[in-house]
Amino acid sequence: MPQANRLKLPTASAKRQAENKILWNDGRSAEEADFFTFGYTGRKTEELLDTLLANGVRTLVDVRQMPVSMYRPDLSKSNLRQLVESKGMEYVHMPELGVPRDIRAKAIETGSRDVIWEWYDQYVVETQIKTNLHRFLNSVEHPIAMMCVEIDPHECHRHRLSVALEQMGFQGFDL
Image (cartoon, rainbow, N blue to C red; front, side):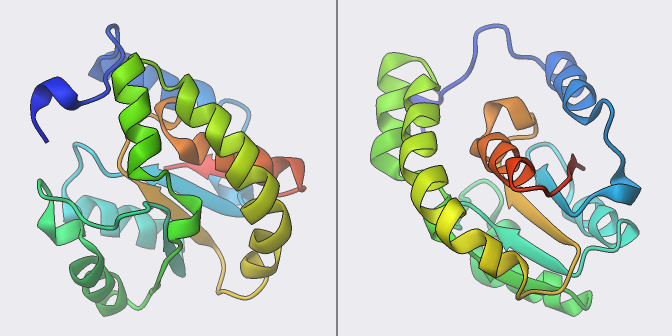
């Protein structure tokens, strides 16, 4: 995707993203987490796998609608599945928890992620999460980690996913 078409917050920086991760996890404990989330941008594949293993993750849930990456082919669905399974974990792709391309395009067009958040809260949280995810969480090996692209949980739909799960009584932690 050309640089001009990427949705970036004007003030976003590596420092701000690191601070947001600290803020998100404030008052939370990895040891007490029912689920984890993480973004892979800027991380090496081995670092990701080591982080998952160090936190005892048994199932990686890919919450990207399209599980492909032209910049990180090692993290495209088939390659990622193979890597995760080689480490003794399960890989599950849940495209219904992702953000469709047309919604991302509207966000890029407007320069605001609010389009994504409004759509996600209305369609995914209300339909997919509240009706299906609770059952899913009870059917896979725990703990789970939900993966997407953005390193900063505040800039990713997994933030909305985490909030919805916490409202259901689960405790999350961003790795």
